[in-house]
Image (cartoon, rainbow, N blue to C red; front, side):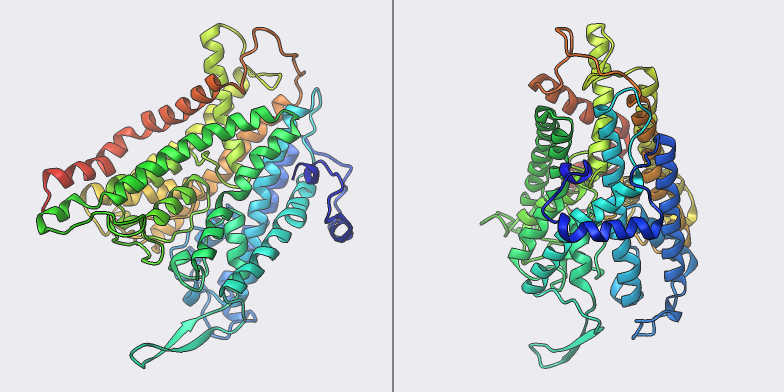
Length: 549
């Protein structure tokens, strides 16, 4: 990936480069023309706004477009708005059943296309930020359209093609046929929806998209048919986010920095997974009065099996829930609404800190770089020196922009979430009262703001109120962060690179890893602790206070 974004020759170059040149020629893109941060940001916004409009129209006029053998009607205005924003922002929030709502044309031309482009946008923005640390005394960050094209052609398309073939081999359908007929064990006839599934699932997983063809997502046997496919899909969730951190190390020519970032991410991931698995393996204390034995006989039996896919059990469900929320993937193999309170707290916490524990493709890295700037600023205050990172001075302007980017998440989650909890139209979506109902709502807005797309599933989000509110939050959570991040890059790229001195705080050391990890935990804990205390923590304690409730 480093070679791709540096414009170096890669193995696939002989095949793909002619296609790349043709795209530039048809689109009128000049490879030699680069953009400053404002030009880059404008290109990001214009391109994605066009994507919103095109996808919105495809969904709205679905009934008049080809490849609609089921004669499905056009999607309602509010739902079309929500879906369009969702897939443009890499969120893939789905408050509908894909197999019964969208035609093959909408799935392929609409959703799958945006799965590629939204992931490529994340790559492009992250690459622009990396260049800010490499270059000096220039306003130029690269060309968005070139970065977008290369991310799609050289990385996402080849990997998705290989992955789609693997999924077809495992039993995932990829066809224009809309259903197959099956005979059940009782002899009854059953119609099972099919369609262009494998091609969508491949990029759904690799691009940190997460939106499935089926309502049951990766718990559906046509999306995830075998234990092998489950394992490979689980790996694919974190593959590119982790690889891109290492790409960062290669591009700045200091791999130690990448390993330090990856170490912080991995420490948080392992701790949170351990909490989630421990909570689910321990079962529900409220069942004790009924004499139900929830002892784990192995990794996947016993414990809290409610809402779990029985093929994969508790260990895989907890691991998938942690991975899908640590990244911006959002796919599920279990009902998060049925997790124990502490088990459900883990994916919620992953999203509340901005999904920087690996994060999505590209966006995980630039989200983590925001935390890094705050961390080196705090370290600079401790030792009385101007904070630096990779030879660039971090001054008041960059810190202010970093704080703006960080504060957007709690504003979206708590601000819009409170409005939804106070408005009668928002309350109607809840299927639970008390702490669990609070968690349902906050989880939805955390998922939207962090561009994750998973839900507690107990929330009825397909209402005019929720579709519009969540659509706004998804848009702000994506582009409201991209703009200050690019502004930071635009400021840093103009600065000189300062040589390392004896007073430079080493950002590849164990001390920095610990400090960075602590800043992430403290930010999430201090910002959201009252909400978590009234939601999952209070629900957890209630299981012991009122074991029969």
